[in-house]
Image 1 (cartoon, rainbow, N blue to C red):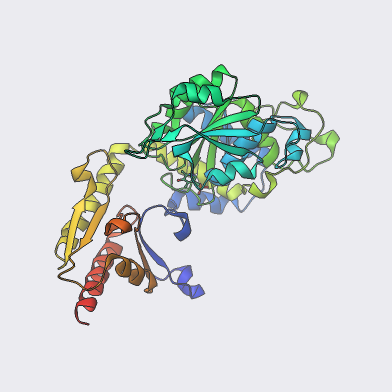
Image 2: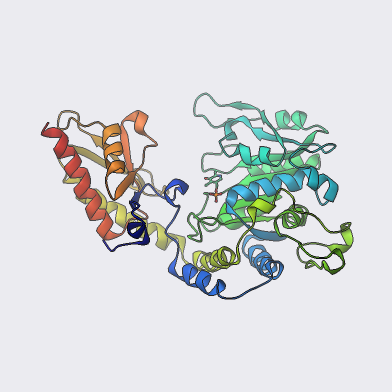
Length: 404
Ligand SMILES: *Cc1c(COP(=O)(O)O)cnc(C)c1O
């Protein structure tokens, strides 16, 4: 394996067999996006002009009224929540995250509660769970009337986490919320591909939807997309693009901020820590172009082929039972599930995962099903060379344990 800047720093690099996980650096950024970032770094540009360009492209791709490049999907959620609470009222925006007079409850189906709720709270929202969790399968059990009666004059928005497991349709949630004039914020950070999801949630009536730029799109790790109505994107732009000039000279682009509808010039608000650099912004736009250009089927086929060839290699390792998920469940993204034969190896799944992570280079395999004794290998970000090395290291670790 060729040396990387991580080797120069004396930091162990990671072989990624878990997928696009932030803690190990997200995705492998597209070379074209890196080139674009390099060019972007050599000259200056107005962030307003650049975000107007982003807004036009995001609108065209998602069908939303407007859009913004954000600092990860997570900050898109903070900005969308802030927008839902304060709108374009500068005084209210400036109070965040401690709104004084604005309704600030964000309702969320209980089964959708997750560790990213904190993004909504960071904007000053009180996150309130509604409905129940279906005991049989852990999905949401929220009846439309339950949402209907939960909405009050304290409600700022309804949040909805898009996953392939959703049973409660977004359309239903939007129907009930919009009946009360309440906006719906959708977290679809990891719901790409399929590419059609870029439009799907907007079509279903979402007021705001966020996607990660540093996952399947393979843009810079710190980018995200916020697409939505002007009512959401305008406050988000006010909060996250610094005005930083003499008030008499403040001249924001009408595509993002309607100057005649706001009073004065805003100060830095809670969006200031989420600034997006010109390099990241340009890198995301380039990556997005390439992402939508490629056929989903082609991408799936590539991942599945890689999964099958890796399965064949791993199947030769003594002591391993390997299944390939897309062969069992079509339509799912390929993962390999490894079960260790207790009789053939002393080492358990937890030790295997830990040992691999402690090597240099570190090897990350998935632990999501560890409680079921399953080790996951996600092949989508592995090069052929890395895949060979992974198989060798798994075999070696299993053998090593046997010889004790
Ligand atoms: C990854 C993820 C996020 C955060 O996305 P970033 O782009 O890393 O900020 C938020 N919500 C969900 C469901 C995610 O999977």
